[in-house]
Structures are given as structure tokens and as C-alpha cells.
Image (tube, rainbow over all chains, first blue to last red; front, top):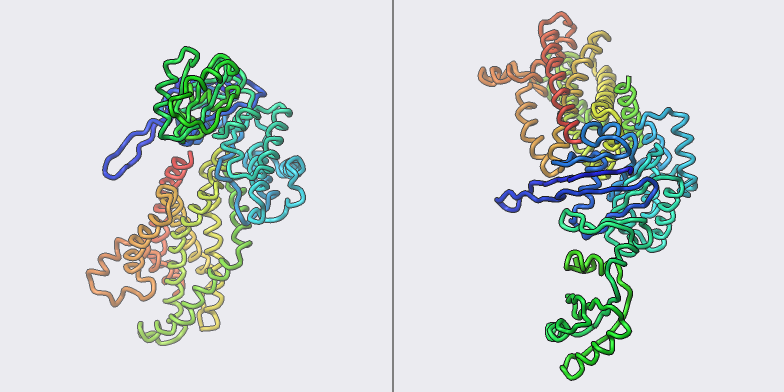
Length: 320
Length: 250
């Protein structure tokens, strides 16, 4: 295990008007991350993903709990953790007035690497991230995707065992995003463990070997995307209808024996968890027939990570 | 030693950034030159000096102390670095925490010494004459002030984390200190109570010391007293600054 945490906790004091409030950002997270995998934290904004990541990267001290990161104890030996990990923040990390090459050399040197070796590593990183062409231009001239690649190159210049990427694709256009996924898979192929946070379902599904779904400071589910989806037996039928008619339809369908579980979609409609979609659809139509409920659409699909999120938290990730 | 190596690393980067921003270099030099050209002529009649040379001997040391004092404004720069994520990027490395502060403060000291040298040289055609040894001692005094002010400024900025909070704080603290330091005009003409107040202002001691040096009296008591006071204060503020800095950047 490259990361092992037990009961990791963090709360912040915030001031809302005159009242001081304590917000429990992370409430006891237990995690196991294996060497060489892409591990993802999936959850809505404010779920505690970034706070957990920043604790594991030694940036903020945990209030409680234990963690071992890359073989070093997080609380007793943060300096050793720093040597063994890389961390790439969400908001970027480069200075406008210097070039990618200068940043890479400085970063390597801050890890104690000698000048000549730092330059060699910068060259290699620039080539690996296809940045050689712009290597000596100032960072302010880069596109969003290029700049993000520089951030990641900076995070792994010292060849860490594990790299933390906080929302690596947020704000990127689809092409840069696909490009970034390839980069992340390349890191895994080189033997690195990659720990990302994301609020994109498709990213968690397509990119991660294993994910932990986080909500309100807690891990509510953990496993490979396929495992998690398999936990929801059967199919999902989404029935679209006007918002006003949703309660009536929900009442009619909730009592039907073939409906295992029913969720209301805020924008109008219902999501029904059934054993077999093919037999359930005619039954659903029959139940609603004559009730006056006007159907806009009916759709059958295999459970998605959003359905997993929904069953674990009672909300859709798309809506939270 | 790791700390010295890391300090050198940060210092080099900061110097590079300063040189790459010619606008800043220009502003840093043109401002004191304005004081020299537009304010100094007022000093001669104001202090009843017999010659230009005497007026510049009184005015230039005060100007140098004021410039050193302005190192207290460098905190704004680190807030910009904080926002760009540069500080956080340093924090996840094992780089020495004190070096992150010292490398930046030393850049500020060097910038100040360069400014001071330009002003000293520019004042020579106006009749200023002062021995090299005394100039170097003066630079030591203002170097200490600059080191102290910049480390306090960085530590304060990291605590507040916002320009909007830092600006009023600095202005509120700086104004009374500057006014009671006798920087632009000597406090010889000040009423007694103002002089008593100035006795408590370490920068007033610094101004007295640098004026004594420019007057050619390195043996003047003010000189060793100022070096002692400023040396002590600089050490204290470096310790406080380093602690606050280290705690905010962990």
C-alpha cells in the first residue's frame, strides 16, 4: 500500500457574520491506495476531496487520525513524505515572468538535485510533456493546457513514487482534457501511483483504476468503477416528465413490486432501479397509462457512477 | 549547509525576476532621484546650512534610511506569489523554510544597496563628500533596516494573505514611525515632547548614526548605539518573521 490512512480528520473555523462556526471538512477518512494505480477521489465541490489531498501532501496538518504516505509517517515525518511525493495544485503553480525550463530547473533544485542533473531532468520533462517548443518562452504566453502540463511536469520532476493531482482537467477544453488523460496514463505506465480528485463522472469512470466517492467529508463508497456499478444490481430506467407531474408518478410507481428503488430527478422525472429493464418498461408504461401523467421520455441504461452516487448519498452528482 | 544553499537558490530566482522587470528597477531609482533633485534644495534654507555640501550631508543619510524603511512594502509581492501558487509549490518540496524568507529578504537588501549607491554617487556633483569607510558603515545600517523591514513585511503579508488588509496596516504603522524619525528634516528644531517621542524610535537612532557617519564622525556614540539597537531588532524580527513565515507555509 502506498497510502494508508485511518480516521483522518480536519475541521476549519469559519466566520459567518458574527457567529464563529466550525466546519468539519473531513470526518474520519480511511483509505488504502495501491502502488501503481490511478486512484480517484470523486465527489461534488466541498466534499472534502481537496482538504484530504492537501493533508496527504503535508500542506495542512490533520486534526486527528493517522496516515502513512509512500512509507513515511505523515505526522511524524512530513519532510520525508515531501521527498517522496509530488503535488499539483488545482489553481496552477507557475510564475508569469519565467519560462517552463527555468521553473523546472528551480523545482528540481528545491528538491536538492544538483544543477547539471536538474537541467537534464528539465530537458527530459519538457520533451515528455511536449513542451520543448515553448520551453524558453515565459509562462504567461502559454495556453491553459500547456500551463497545466508544466504544472504536472513540475510535480514529478523529482521522480516521486506518487503524485497528487487536484482536479487536473478542470477548465480544460475537451481536446486538452483527452491529452491530459493520456499523460496521466503514461505516468502510471512508468510505475508511478497517481492520485487525482475530480468531480467529473466520466473522468473517474474512464481514467481511474479505483475510486473513492466522497460526500460531506466522508468516503461513502470505494472500489473500481465496475465494482461499484455492479453493486447496483439490475438496470436503471429514467422516465422524463414535467416537474409538476413527478410526485404523482412517484406515488404510483413506488408501490410497484418490480421497482427496487426510486429517485426523483430535480429537473423533472424519475430514476427507477429495476431488475430487468426490458420487462420493466412495459410495466411502467402500463402503470402510468391512464393516470394522466405525460411522459416526455423513457430511457434504459446500465447503472453509471452517478447512479452509484445517487444510491449512496440520495443526490445526483450532476445536481450537487 | 542546506539552508545556505536553498537561500542562494531562492535569492538567485528573485534577483532574476527583479532584473527581468526593468520598470521596477527604473521606478526604484527615479523615485529617490526626485527627492534628491526636487526636495534637497529646500533643505538648505530650512536647516540654515552654510553650503550645499552641508545640506546634502544632512539630507542624503535621511533619504537612505527612508528607502531602507520602504523595504517594509515588499510584502505585497509575496501575496501575488501566493495567489499564483508559487509559494504552495515551494511548500510541498523539502526546501528549507527559513531560506524561502531569507532568499527574498536578501534580494530586497541588495536592491536597496544598489539604490543607495546610485543616490550617493548622484549627490557627489552637488558637493557631497564622504569617506568610503563611512559610506560602507552607513550601508550596513540601512542594510540591517532593510533586512528587518522586509522579513517583517513578508511574515505579516503571509499572515494577512490580502493586499486589502496589508495596505492600511502598513500605512498606519509606517507614518508615525517615519514622521518621528527625523528623516527628511532633523528633529533639532522639534519641540521637546516630539524629541522625547523620537528617542523611542529606533529609526531616529539610525538617522542620527548615518548623519554622524556622513559628517565624518564614525566614532560618534550614535553609530555604535544604532548598530547595536538595529542589530538586536533585526535578529528579533528575523526570528519572529521566520517563525510566522514557517508556520504559515509549514
